[in-house]
Length: 341
Image 1: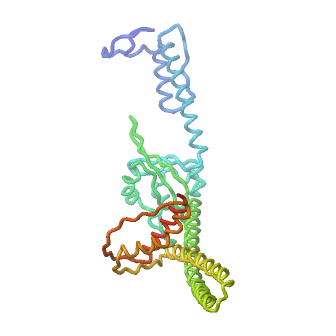
Image 2: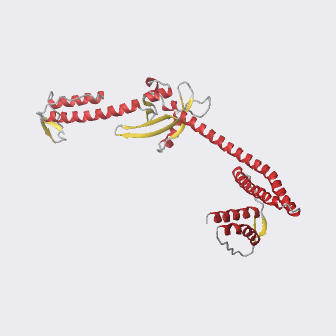
Image 3: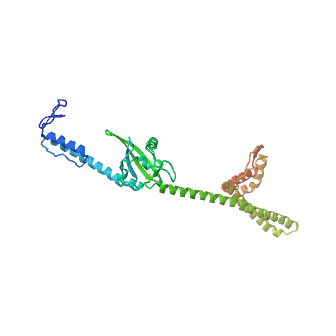
């Protein structure tokens, strides 16, 4: 819209400007001044009895809202714990460097502004690593702009490197575009991750050592225990042959206790071997029916004890497997069935 006379509007395109010294001309001059200074607190004089004054009042409301929004955004940026920077899309020079970034990198705001953002990133990991150049940063930006946070190494003003997580976003406006980056020092997080990994590895190694110890000790315990069981059986035979029947019950108790302890040790041995990764299988052909009959003959008394009936339907065929492990598996299954049925 263009000005025709004091307090009157005309259709655009007639080429007329507000009269010299008019209220509208003064208003336009004030707007030009605000645009040049960028001062958000600027307000236009308001005359509620004129069209120009009504326009000024609306403009002041909009500027007040914008000033509040800018103040909130500036407060967030200035107090953020993460480093926040902006840099141009043409030469990648830094245009904003918040206090957290200053503390993180050791550059003052005036030292950083105008410098290439590549100054903040290490070209490679190493004690003598230099900063990236603009070309290297431009090469990495497409991946950083993909949306997810990326890990890289940053370089402080004193030359030291530290691990950093970065998120970059391109902001587009009517006046152009720029990059904004959120930077987080993850040195402490990396340290904790390394400590947790070390503790995990130590726990795994301790568990392997324990399993190896149990496997060895269980084997060593079985040797004398087998001897005790064997001698108890021999003594039972001698007691029966020499008519010392009063000793047989005690010898049977010794034998039964030894057998029970041997089963426990065998279970520990197998478990520790599995944990230690040392479980060996001895595959050989055998008759399945023969194995099943052996197991059933032993498990029948336990089934009858709880008034259960054990019926087996098995065809005879040959299979290749570890017959000892199969027999033990069948014992475990039937034993649990008899105990809890």
